[in-house]
Length: 272
Image (cartoon, rainbow, N blue to C red; front, side, top):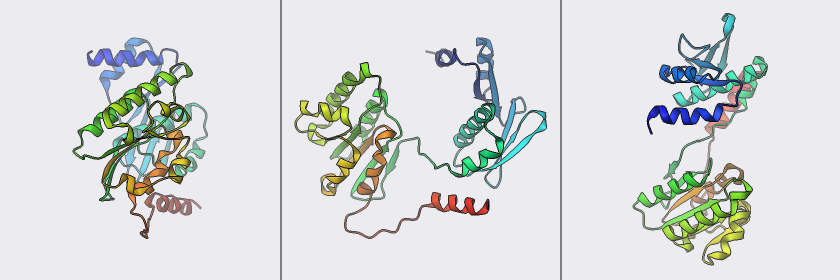
């Protein structure tokens, strides 16, 4: 399919919406949206945008609303994607009548969330592919393919339940479990969540746990030593709680400084 076909396929998702919020940086996309008849509002660092938004050092987002109203918000940006995502969220909040004076306080409470697969190599004994922000059938299959491309011989898959409609739940989980066993071997599969836990009996060598706490209670560092480990699952299953156990060597004292927490505390004090 062409770029135009893909765009129009995605736009079908918004046919029932009263208004769509979109960044103003791609004039071609804007033109195509106008042709569909969708009502939309644009935001971005563009003179044609309905609401102007732009970055101003140090770490300040400026929003210029209609009637020359403007707002300056403190926020640390790590990428252009952060700026675009925040701009869209703020525009939506404003149009849903969230008080503008409340937005800065809300931003101060935001934690940074990684939305892409991370390759964690801080522990020389275990390489971790951390992909714990979301999971559906396709993204799980893509993660399996990524693991296969790594040269490391020993591989382990830690996979949580997926959030799915009830009528698809059993079939999709069984299919993914069978794929995992075929591609990596049953002994290398670790499942978390009630759906996978219920299916694990179909493959006796698979290890399954009802929740992440049960996994951590029985965690064995040596089982994953010298492995490439995939952490894949939905956020609700909190697989990120496993990371410290994979990333740190046992019986070692570590000092961890959270720069995110330091930054948050600094902003809280500055706003007093």
